[in-house]
Image 1 (cartoon, helix red, strand yellow):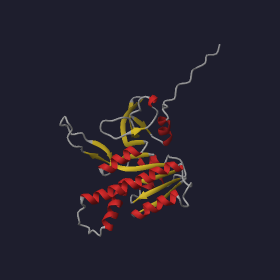
Image 2 (cartoon, rainbow, N blue to C red):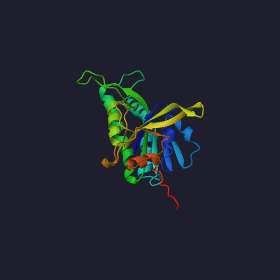
Image 3 (tube, rainbow, N blue to C red):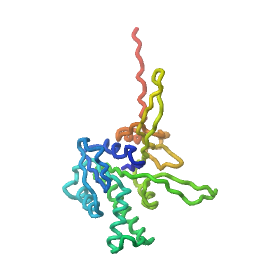
Image 4 (cartoon, one colour):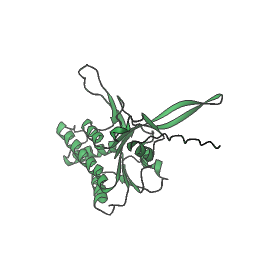
Length: 248
């Protein structure tokens, strides 16, 4: 299970499309699946209501979709949260301008946690699960040293974000890196799609792997599922150079 978050256009959906096929993408009020329309082995289903979320889960867990897919992607859980809030407001017969009480925010949070957990548990049925989210800066309360400790993570309610961070095996922050590379006498602008996975003071990131594996790399350039799997096994992405055998 993985959580991929980042700014719009940084490659979250494209990265998720490298997961094993066949894949089902829950397009949650986002229409972001256009970027992977040409990728073979991917089905997309539009999710427009909270009932769609529940129905799709049961389709995968016990219905005709059971055993059909190797990967399920929820794109995006930030929009999924909006559906949860809309469902709570609908059930309480609230008007558009009615404010949400603390209790109702709690109901929406609980609903999110329950169904994010249910989808995460599809792992037990041999399905990879990818959660995709927009990013935002979360400003924490003052610490003992009177310093504000901000963090950047998924655009979710703090309680839901903390829950999902702990529930998944990997958390990666997508971003675009621009640098200039010297080729001959000229400097060429190079744009790279990157995934931040190593420990960071501000960005939420992690990969669960054997304790003996050592430190994680800070970032993965042109990330793919295979690269994440290699790192999670404790292996290096850098292939050792083969020894040169001299002939006598």
